[in-house]
Image (cartoon, rainbow, N blue to C red; front, side):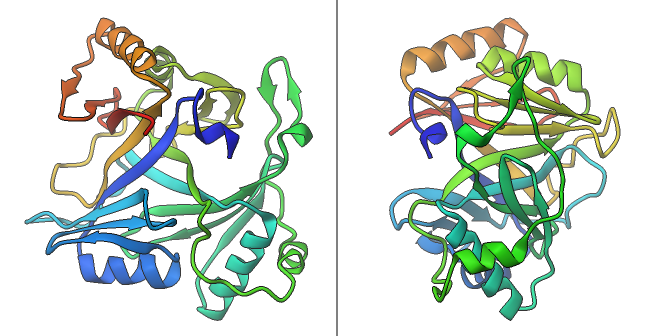
Length: 282
């Protein structure tokens, strides 16, 4: 998990606006395997290690179902520590008859599913970085069939017991309206292109395969969702220290982006209206 700690800029907790808090809390605890860190009448903070938030669910008043073909969340991705952990997850999902997609991306092995509101979720494990193939500063990625049997075999007789303590928010993948404009914005924040895909960019810091996925698969120029739409509320970018964050904020303000100061973090949005919480590693 060295790509998800200083000196890198990496993804932190994701905030979702949900239509039914009880239903979603049950899904994310019983099916995905989170623990509850904080719970109020309209908000639940979920964790994998009992200390750090990874997912925040909030049910606003007058919430509407997630609107289709908008900018916003494609999926958030939970990175598990080991291949055995992924094998345990496959067994767990199979027993619970969860519909899954699956891919071998060369750099990682991944499962895909959706929550009851239609938000995409990826659960994956990374291959060792030494096995990733880079050429001309781009990492080789693919969408190949997953060898689920070998992954399950790697878990031996171990059974799923929720998300393991070392789980982190591996990356966030967003629908955006304009790739060139989005690239300029995230480069100003400190990210570099790790690889290209049709109508998509994958960006990272520190030569990770990607902390951010950015695509126009909902259509170039896709509109923003309404404020009342379920889906992404915000996602978090974590900076190694104040100076790095201050430099990034100055650069995006130079692009004309508004950045608001809060008690212990800043809030902005990318050119497609995806809200971002900017904070320092703690």
